[in-house]
View 1 (tube, rainbow, N blue to C red):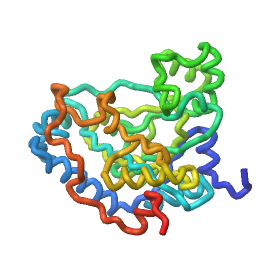
View 2 (cartoon, rainbow, N blue to C red):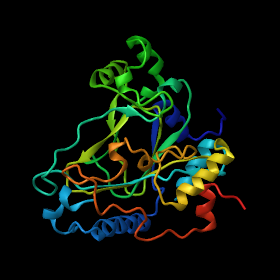
View 3 (cartoon, rainbow, N blue to C red):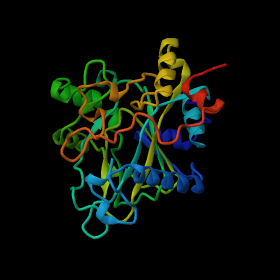
View 4 (tube, helix red, strand yellow):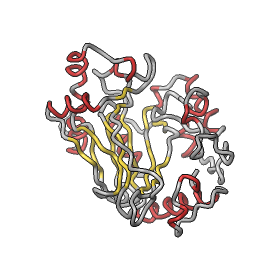
Length: 302
């Protein structure tokens, strides 16, 4: 590690996560929030931001790059085609009442067979104030460094918790999480201000919690990695995915498209009765402008 490595990067490697303040201009955050609500209101399900009775399942369907460039040591990066998070608060006074707050679902987004190495940092661009009651990212601090000991203690991976031999993902039980806590991994619900950037190691055990206060949660998932990690075939496929306006997992170089996996229940949006949403869109309401900067993050080079 270089003597010029900033403190935030040292904390990221030690704790598995870090919050970088003021990485998104406030006016941009406000614009993103407005666009997200307009997007929800365009669907034919009757959602209205100012009418809490429509906050139900029936009615619902960038200094950032600099931080990732510092981590990777290059600005020749490609981006994931990740999702946004617009979560209405769940409570009887000011929020939704048709669902309950979600329970913890501890997991990591990296193949457990590669727990001994860093492979990816994930990110959340926080677009609204995110306090203790506003939902958001929860982590087991430092858990990314203890997987060898954990899997040794339980005799290896449990098939029912493993996403797959070649997949990036592993689910942890409450008992597993308790083991990490016993080793000193503190459970932290991360708080962040509007405009902050949260970065974490994909090996870190994490989950998201529901907002239960008055604040709607607005966030977008961001992830960048060096273009050199993708083959020419990967890059060609990435351009195809972008042109089809499909979303991917967090891994920019792998082009895993959940919507192309028919056995994935969550590949397409569903209504409260679990039927496919007839209003599902395969193209955005507003097509993105394919600027040179955007195409560069897709991997296109002139």
